[in-house]
Length: 180
Image (cartoon, rainbow, N blue to C red):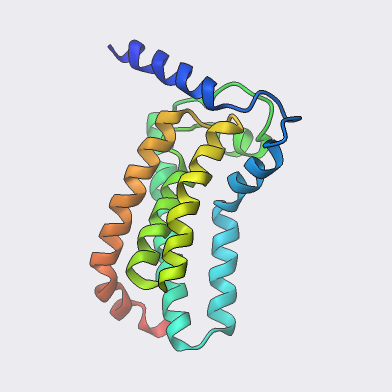
């Protein structure tokens, strides 16, 4: 049964994968795939914390804590499950630093951010991130660094983690008030 599911996953993933780096969709896919990088988001949150007004600083701290906990949690899951990434050439950094693919940290982070924005951000940001999250996830498959099931699991985890962080937000805000 598991082998049948993995085989189906591999076939569906192959259908979504871009045929080569010379495809006209390659550059947009790479851009989207990298737009979910944790270092990029954490850098943005740090910048908002440094230059923002108090409400923006509170927002940046909350989002940064959520992304930090998400990244550590997904890394621990990947080290436990240890599913190898799909074969491929692109994504050497990911393949060397983080050779395991299940679940997708980028998909988890993208959907987590979309949920947090829906609970905290302006409507325009919520809509942008709701549109962006699935694109980031599919770009990870299109560029060959994840299987479709990796991003499906990551999306589900991101939605669940986002809900949990929204529920815990009042407590976290009190605990971290010294950072505002």
